[in-house]
Length: 161
Image (cartoon, rainbow, N blue to C red):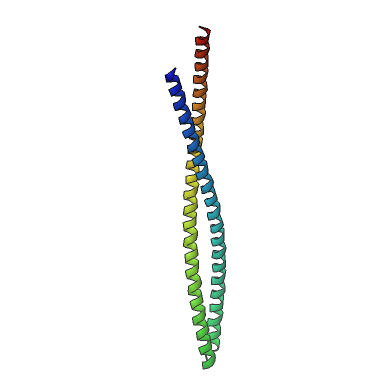
């Protein structure tokens, strides 16, 4: 009888531990899902920034081309030429800045994609762990009910004697 009680207590502890692990796994899954949502928002933001940077780059390229063409046409005027040189220099620095911004944004986007993939894998792993814990909990519950039924039958037969 004591063995049954000990076994029953051990099974209860194991069920409680499995429940705690399942709850912890669910918490991790929710946290990781929230992280994925946050990372997706960041990716969207970075994509928008990338599009803006590409647009700025195109505008800067077209302005640079325009100013270079204008510079060739108005080379006869020294003052105009100097002004255009300054503008070209300014546009080239803007172009460099836009290209640097584009590279940085592209790198950030790539890193976010990698992180999102990692988080998706973690979520899948945790979901599998959760499934495993739920299955184990169900098995333990079935075992517990069978042992309880056996114990009740034994107690009934002892009471009948």
